Amino acid sequence: MIVDIINKKRNGQELSYHELDVFFNGYLDGKVKDYQMSSLLMAICIQGMSDEEIFSLTKIFIDSGDVLDLSFLPGVTVDKHSTGGIGDKTTLVIAPIVASLGIPVLKMSGRGLGYTGGTIDKLESIPGFRIDLSDEEVMHQVEDIGIVITGQTASLAPMDKKIYALRDVTGTVSSIPLIASSIMSKKIAAGADKILIDIKVGNGALLQTREEAEKLSELVIKIGKIYQKEVRTIVSDMNIPLGYCIGNSLEVLEAIKILQGNERDNNLTKLCIDLASEMVCMSKGVTKQDAIDMILDSIQSGIAYQKFLELVQAQHGNIDLLSTSKKVKIIKASQSGVIQSISAIELGKLSVSLGAGRTTMEDTIDYGVGLELLKQVGDSVQKGQEILKIYYRKLPSLPDFNHIFLIK
Image (cartoon, rainbow, N blue to C red; front, side):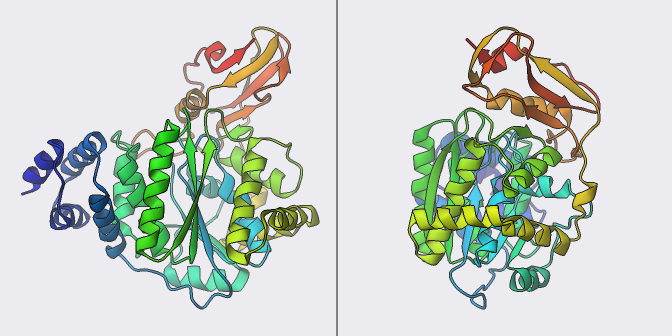
């Protein structure tokens, strides 16, 4: 039957709830092998899925574990998810800001997929930081300090966790049906009242076109309605990296700068304020401008950064031990002019080759390596001026930076 299901999807036919249930639960139980699941995932990537198949798969993912009950928390809880991008450390900024305004934040995040970094990998760059909290620890911490960021607990959507790891290394990441089911199963299982999803689109994202982003937006909203959850989406640009840093420790340090009010005004800062204000609006029912004012006050007064430190301390991290590689190579502009574009995907590939991401399920991440942009799109540069820092342990073959930084 397993081979029949693979062949049916390969031929573009719709799978029933029962067929999906047998196959995916068989994989969770170890009866279906990695190579068989990889074949079905690739068939889904190529042939797609109907809405009914997506709804069925989401339910199967949710039913593979528990669903948290957050009704004991005061007010309206809002969860946030990003589809991932190069340099995307928005959760590290947004979660403390929102929690500092009295809105409980219970965030279950994932590891990196493909060239896109994962929040959990970034947090693990903080020595001692625990991401494997139990349901009981999660509940206690969010009630105690109003914020928790953890990996998927063993009991929440365990099927998605296993599939997620396989997709990362089998070329089956960029599938809208699989993305929709993965996101929404985790978000619904995590129990928040409302959900905000940041859908990245561009060469450094899982989705390449606005049309794909709108399709995903439509799907997650439909799934939300089935489970009586309000879902809002924001489509954001990922043709250039978010902010200045790519790589785990470097991105944590950049997030800290924003929370301390010291980061320059750029695409990352603007997106963080936009996303955080949307979450505040959804929870408190205030206007967008009122939400922005509250957020800026939280940063300027220092309470957002203090909430971040509370989070780190509660999960046993030591921010003072956060470090980056001491080996640094500087890339300089080959000509004078204005930077017209910076290729997010090429810098993402470079960061993985440095060791900041995974190419196989067994890969170990080097938290201290990565990239720091010294200039952004629109900046004027002189020939020989520094434009990029590479933090490395062992330097890989480097790309042609004239193709990454288009200067005219």
